[in-house]
Image 1: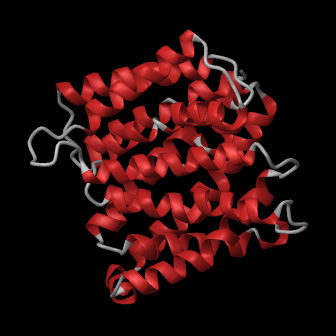
Image 2: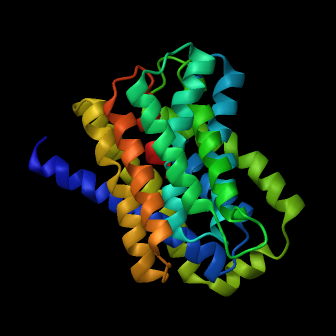
Length: 298
C-alpha cells in the first residue's frame, strides 16, 4: 500500500473514532434525543445523495430493509446505547459485528467456517462479553452495550442481505440508506421522544456542528475515501487496518470523555481485536461486503 493511502486509512479511522466520541457528547452531554439525532442525520444524507437514488435496485423491498437496518435502525440503537455506555467499550462491542456477519453468512448464504475463523469468532465473543460484563451493578451485562450489540447485529444482517442485491454503487447505496431511514426515524422520534426542538435549540451551534460532522464529514467524506481504498486494494488488506478504529476510539475515550480502562477492559479489548484480526485475515467471499458495509458505517 502506498504511504499516502495508508495515511488516508488512518485519517478515515480517526474520523470514525471521533464520530463515536461526538455521538457520546451529543446524546449524553447535550442530552439530544437519540432518535431525533438519527432522524436529522439521515435527512441530511438523503438530501445530499438524492441525485444517486435512481434507478432503484431490485427487489425494492430488500434495499429498503437493508437501508433502514444499516442506517436509521442501526444508528438509533447505537445512539441509544452510547447514552450510558462509554465510547471505548462501545467501540469494542461494535467489533462483534464481523463475527456475527460470518455466522449469518453460514445460515443465510450456506458458507462454511474453518477452525481458524471459528477460533477468531470465539475470541471475539469472549472479549466482547468481558467488556460488556458489569460486575458492579445488579444487572450482569451493561444495558447500553446490549443496545450497541443489537446495532452491530442489524448492520451484520443488512450486510448479508446486501449480498443478495447486485450492482448497487456506493453513493447509490448511501442514497437508499438515507431514503429508507428518514420517514421511519421521523415517526419514531415524534412518537417516542419529547422536547427535541428545545434540546437542539439549547445546544445551539455546538449541536449543528456535531450534526454536520456526522452527516458530511463521516457519512460523505470518510466513507467515500474508504470506498476508494476498497476499490484500489484487496479487502483482506484493508479490513485488518480498520482495527485502528476501535484502538483510536479507546484512546480518544480515555483522553476526551474520561473512559475507565481497567484490566478487565484491557483483556476483553485484546481478545476481541485478536479475534477480529483472525477473521479479517481469513479469505471469505462475504468479507469484502462486510468490511465495506459494516466496518465503515461506524
